[in-house]
Length: 181
Image (cartoon, rainbow, N blue to C red; front, side, top):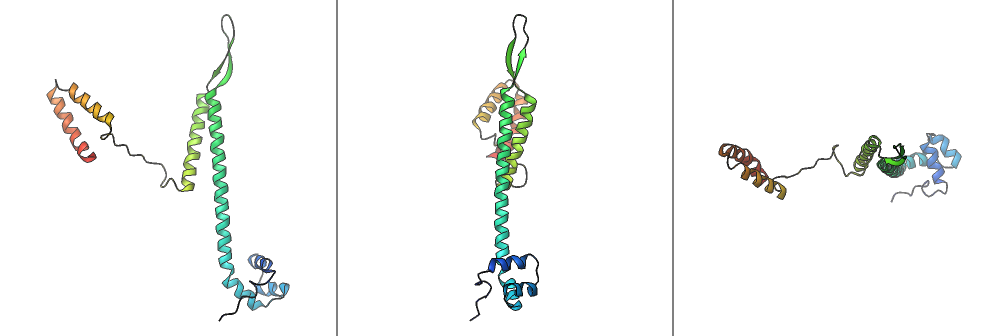
């Protein structure tokens, strides 16, 4: 049965691990903590990589959470700017008889805020894994929609007096409708 690691059970283990991960040599760490250089070397080889890997994973998760929080705050700020731009800037409008105070929306600022909010949402979606391979893709099946069926019927009915145009349109639509079906 293998012997238990003397450093793992040592009350100064965290300090020893810190010294080893800071780049100190086994020979310098061992006398400082009254342990053998061989035990220090074995501990570093067998146990430190697992602990360092776990610590790195924890740091990465914490960093990702912090990034996600920052992105959400940025989105909230962009959305607040959008609301302010849409509400408008109070402006005095001079009239012939009296002046009026009106709110004029800043459409340029609103457009920029929309763009920034969209960028924040896209980045949050990428970070969380909801969005893969860049831009989102949306497939719309117009042929199956009731709106398309009504429009198709209306167009075909309107083309009844023009049999050549009606035949050309039906021929053009047939392959697309067959694929959609």
